[in-house]
Length: 151
Image (cartoon, rainbow, N blue to C red; front, top):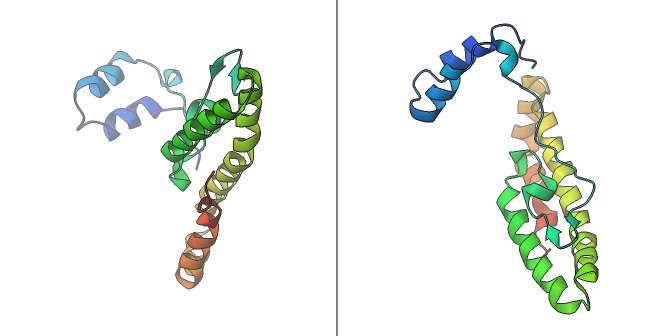
């Protein structure tokens, strides 16, 4: 569902009216609808996960929507794989290449599955709900099964 830009600031102020502190201060500091951006920001695809000896892990390297609940998990997996790669490689550069090569397939799959779950929310409720009632547990287990083996 698209949120029309006109009136967006007022709608946000109404939605967060019970909030205080920084949220209230921030919304009060705005004066135009155009200052509010609403759009899909869950996909982050930088060209490289590292430059020189600076390495990105977790959402900084490969953010996705929260539909799979894997943001923190992939960051921890990244850290473990990065350490393993560094301990077994002769150079930092070789370790970083190995880290990306090992992590990319799993991260791509998490992003793919997360996107699919998000897209399923756009199905007509009668179809989506019937499918979930009939096969929801099976679909859930199938969607997450690839996460069982270690990264």
